[in-house]
Length: 245
Image (cartoon, rainbow, N blue to C red; front, side):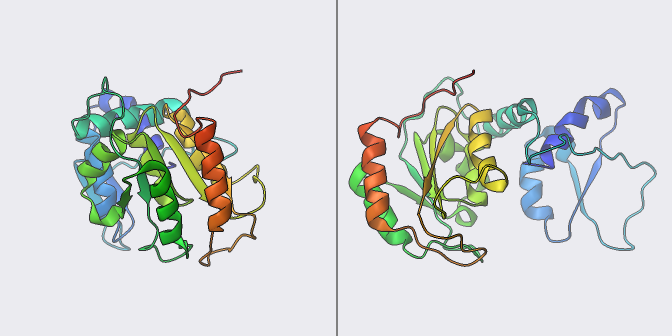
């Protein structure tokens, strides 16, 4: 959400000078960050963990943050990234989503796990039938892209896994959040906005309970069932294009 758009913004500048950069990443991050960078062609050929005293360069290009306020950059760069990801995985952009709904689990996350996730998933199954419960570390990267690209609906608790909506188009995302009402500023809004910027749409569902900070939390199952029934009755589980005012 924050660093890859900066690379996309610098792409034309680097290519015009014939520069194939070595990209510095934090130690231990080179494997998973490299998966994303390699979808961008020559820009991701050389990924180097930056350790103290081990790196020297003749030229260092620094791309500043692309925004003054908020947490996301210009939509254009996310759309360019989306095209690269989908092409990398062989996704047919002309094909509408026709797969199963995806529930993104956080049970393997270190914090903010959904305590009653099994109950929430069962409610989703009663509404939608078969659900693809996805633990992202267990699914190969290209397969993640293809499955999200083919999903008509993505459901899950707020967290990093929801950024995979960038692999989708024409998909509705239901974000489960703690709290009683929307917070108007901060990362919680970014997942919704990220969906809108990439040709998808999103609804935020609130538990009515206090924020857990980094602790585990629960979404009341009866409340979620009522919310989901209303969503389905109104057709809001289906993607609707963003309204531009």
